[in-house]
Image (cartoon, rainbow, N blue to C red; front, side):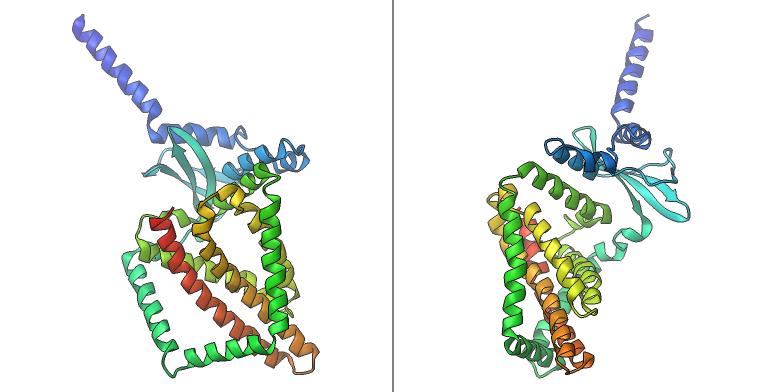
Length: 337
């Protein structure tokens, strides 16, 4: 009798343990997510009262609704730290559903297509070492007679030649950032919800996976993301259309950034993060300024080609600012935050 009681007790322990295993917790959360129990609809967020909207928006950020046509395999999870990954697909688009666990509960669920994740090679030590060598080589060329130095001097001359336009761009965009940061003091719940929304986007592409890989890898990943997504795709490309689209885009972006990254939320950490903000925001200001130079030169009769050269010079200088920002931000995340 005692032996059977012991076996029954052991089985009960296994059952309880199984219910609390990361795979089981994540599986149950995903099943609820697929049934729509965790995610508010976007219509609910937009129609919510001012008092209710921040909570729903934050919930929407942590548990964005599953895409239509999503299929996934709940029987083959992969566990890495506090994350559980389930193979998934949406039509021909292959990816994975990621569940972030904290204190035994699912705190975030999202679908990440394969093409949206960071390339695995960026998270390797070799990539971090390569970024260090690129940085040293670039800085070395800036102090030598080289095209890199010539482009830098020409970009600085462009700023001096159009100092009024450059000052206008700085005052407008930094001013909108400051306005957003100030308004966040009056609406801290909404600002926190927007911060969660941005954090969810960064989590979805896997930027957080670079944290803990070392400062070299982290700096390289930060630069790659800011350069491709911020400076090129949403900077240079819209600036090619005479600067107006990138000006409007960054005006909205800087206001929202200020709202989500306000000292009202970051507290004392804002001072440590301030150099990162100044450097990164200056990079996007530069490409915006370059787009306005393109507009000014074209409208002034100098031609699109000369204006395009000004835009590319500003883009180059912006990339240099992002290089410096990436190293500081990686050091900040690794040692200060």
